Image (cartoon, chains in turn brown, yellow):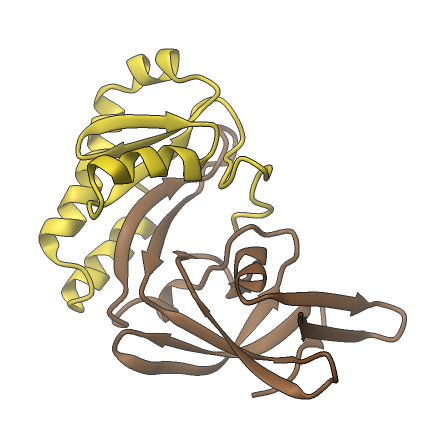
Amino acid sequence: MSKAYLGPDGRPRVRGEWRGPRGVINSAKEFVIDSGANRTGLVSSNVIGHGLVLDGIISIGTAGRPYTVLELSGGELSFQASDRTGKPAMVTYRGTIIAPLSQNCLGMDALKSVGVKLTLDLVSGSVSLEKS
Amino acid sequence: MELPGSILNILLRMTLAGDIPLKRAYDAIRQVDVFERDRPDIESKYAGNIIVVCGERIFYGASLDEALRKARKEFPDRPYYAAAIGIPFRWRSSQVALSGGS
């Protein structure tokens, strides 16, 4: 598992291991870390056949931009952060996710849940996920 | 709002894959039907709120968390349908809208 990094579009990313109740399904999937997103979500191919539980259907769009997602539970997402000394520390988010999104997204709900802070230095191009 | 084909497609594929029991998928879709059936009434009564349809009943709040908390007291394990009525969607009362949705 690698540390967080900047993608070609300048958005921070991290590779994570996504597990459904049926075990390890998707290792080293790339997640965009979106500090403006309240929810963590996945593309549809990462949720089908994993044994996830359907919690509900949510219409999150406005009248001019309808968008509907499923809320699913039972999965786990592990990714690498660092502790306060800079040593690598694996963290695991266990909570609901939404799908389908156009790309896998690690949102603030997951970062808050596991006590990880995103620091982005656009000048040096460095990204860090630090466990508090 | 009718359910988009992409959502129906995922529900069908998850059902066929054995992720979701058919009864549960039907129950979730049924809540969307209830919303559509009662939509004019819901839109006039609950404007400015997030509503959750669960167990064919309407629950509301300033955020999804609040509306869902009320629904979960009555129906702890049934699937739901949630929508914002005339306002941007709010996951939590302390937060504004989801950025993106794409």
